[in-house]
Length: 545
Image 1 (tube, rainbow, N blue to C red):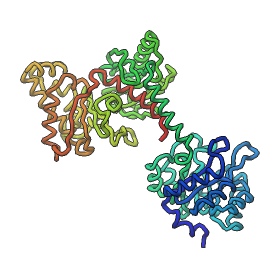
Image 2 (image 1 turned 90 degrees about the vertical axis):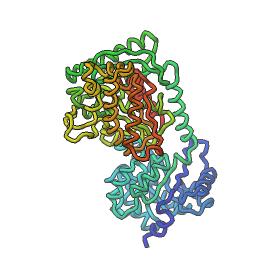
Image 3 (image 1 turned 180 degrees about the vertical axis):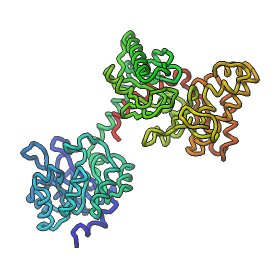
Image 4 (image 1 turned 135 degrees about the horizontal axis):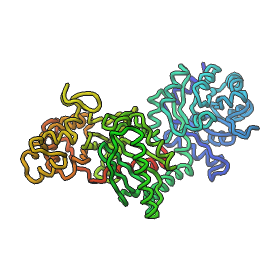
C-alpha cells in the first residue's frame, strides 16, 4: 500500500496548521511550538506542519495527529531551502514526522530535489510532499513520485514574487494538471472563505500558518488597517475628484471623510474626441492642484469617475457609448499618472457613486443596494453582499441598456429599445414637448410649480424608469434604490411616482421593504464618488484579505 494512503482518510478535506516561528520572534522555542500545535488540534486541526527535528519531536510528544516535517536550511546562494538533504529528511522522520515536505521548485530541483524525493520514499518509507510554485513544477514532481503537491511556494520564488494573494484558480489548474496526485492548498490563505474556495477548487486538504499561528503577523494586519484609517481621517488627507459626464465635468478636493473643500464645473468637450477629453481632464486636475496649493494641502491620489465601462486596475475605458465619441480604449489613468505623478484610480461614474454612497451617504449601513444615475445617460452601480459588483469583464450594472421596448427607440450603444433613451434627460424633455421645455431642469421646475404638462411628463418618465428598475430589483433584491444625477435633483414627484410604479411591477412588494431614496450627496455626488474610489483603493491597499 502507498504510505500516503494510510493517512488520506485522516487528512482528506481537513485543515492542517503550520506551527513555525522565526529565530528572531518571541515564540521561537520548541516547547512553545508544541503548545501552539496542541492548541491547534484542540481547535480541530487534523494535522501539523513543523520545522526541524527539535520542533517535530516536541510536537510529536504533544499531539497524536499526523505531522508534516520539514527542515529549512540556509544554502550557499544565501536563501533558505526546505529539506535540502536526505539526512535532513531522515532526522525529521526519526523525530516523529509522518510525512516529509521538500522544495520542488525549479531552484529545489537544481539542488537535487527530485532524486531526493525518490530516495526518501524508498529508504525512509514515508509519504513525500512537493512544495511548488508553478504548474510545470507540480507536473514534474508528480512524475517523480510525489505523494501530493502543495502550493506552498507560490509567491515566494523569483518567477512568482508578484503574487501576493491566494488564487483558487491556480489550485483548480493544479488539480487538473496532476490528475490523481492530491493537491494541498497552502500559502496566502487568510480567511475561512478562502479555505472554502480552495476546497471548491478541488484541494485535497488545506494548510494554514501565518493567519493562525503568528500573533505578530496577525497584529500587523490589524495595525496596517488602523494606520490607513488614521491617514484617511487626517485633516490634511485630501483627494482630487473628477466627475466627467457627457455634458459637464465637475471637479474638486475632498477629504477622506467626504468633506468637500473645493468644487468647480466646466463643459465637457464631448464632441471633440479622445485627445481633447484627455487634455480637458489634465486641465481639471491642474485646477484642483492649484487650489490645493493655495490651501496648503497635498492630495494623495486622483479619482476619476467617467461614463463608460472601466478596467479599474489599468485605468482604461473598456467601452463607451457615443455619448463620448472616441472614448472607448482611452486610458485616462495612465495619462494622468504620467502628467501628475500621483496614484490615479478610474471608475465608471455610476460605480463611483455607489462607492460614495457606501462611504459617505445613504448606504453606509446597507450591504445590498443599487445606485441609478439619471442625466445625459442612465447608469447603474450596485453593491452585493457589501462588495461593489463590477463583473469579471467590468461590464456589470448596465442598467441603462436593459431592454424595455423591443425594437424601440435607438440607443447610443447601437441597439434599440434600451432604458436609456426612455429615461435620460432628452426623454424627459420629449415627454413634455407640448410645454416647449428645453431641458430636464425646466420640466422639473415647472412640475414643482404645478404645471400639468410637466407633471404628466414626470409621470411618463417614472413609468419607463420603473420598467428598468423592476428588472434589477427582481434580479438582485436590494435593500435600497438610490437615485442620483441631474434629473434626481429637486424632483420629489419622481420619487413618489417611481415608488408607485415599482409597487405595480415588482412581486411581493410589501415583503421586500425596498427603500427608494434620492442620493444624500446632492449636486456634488459625482465628485465625492470620484474621490471615494481613490480613498477606497488606499484603504484596500492596507487591508490584507
